Length: 419
Image (cartoon, rainbow, N blue to C red; front, side, top):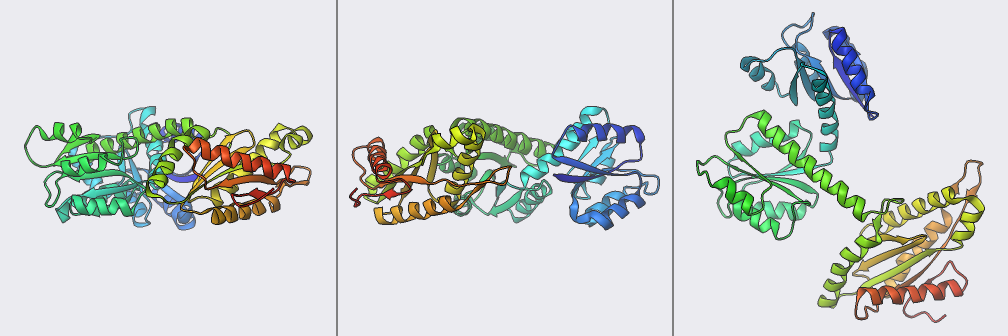
């Protein structure tokens, strides 16, 4: 749970903010009514404060001193202000705050708390800024750092591609148009050969007056376009809206491709992704192993302890498989059965790895409420015989699984085993 500091001298505003915060179970608020109280909170709880919502004018700090205090402690600040004009806006933005909110109604406070949640989510997102101007790169990077993003930079399109290949978790690219080596539009074209719009957001930038540039960027695959110079608020809104759209797409994709119970990949995703891995291995004559894993006596466990305990056991086994085989493709095939595809491993290596995982599962108990420790085992079939399709390879692994069950369970059978 993220703790925020709210500094506000108005009882009415404090009451509204408290109500809004209560609607968000992942946010906890500490309140102060003046500069002195806020300083005490920061002195005693600074390491626990994630962000701050602060009024700009307090009885003992009428000129925004509270903002300087909180920022000086390294805490991101969202300013709550009762009035707005260009001079005030420029003054507070120049301090390096995340954003400001005019106190105009309940939605304003919901927006402010939403900004705190956005800051938290941004910490897991990486952004690449591409611009041949060092000054422009620094400025845009600073805006993104204020929003909590992990920021990388590149001076041209070719360097940008190298950074993306090295940093596979980049979710957003912000690129200028006019650059040496490879301009922004060419960079977009190159990136879209590998990354779809559901994988990577691209926002184009340009300071040139060519009115067709926005269309050129978007027609070649960019999600959005901004003309430089842009203002702070427009930049933040465009970035936020595009990132939130990407998150929604990913949530929908996860709901489709991830198993509802265990959270690992589903059978459907296994075959979609697995087919690509399979075809690549066949085309390059590289080894690829397929494993079919099935929990032993699972129906008996369900009958004895109930389906809720059975579900907990499936989740625990899935977590172990995901952790131990994180370099590979692992999915729940259905019921108590799991699939794994292990490119680059020969049969001895794959069989040895699955056997190690089997031992981990067998020695990891599930603790029940009454103190009982429930153990389970699994049997598995592993094959590198690719056959004519991924389906055929899985079928062969399943044939070996049946042999493992018939031979007494808690076994892994591979291509060279004779049972």
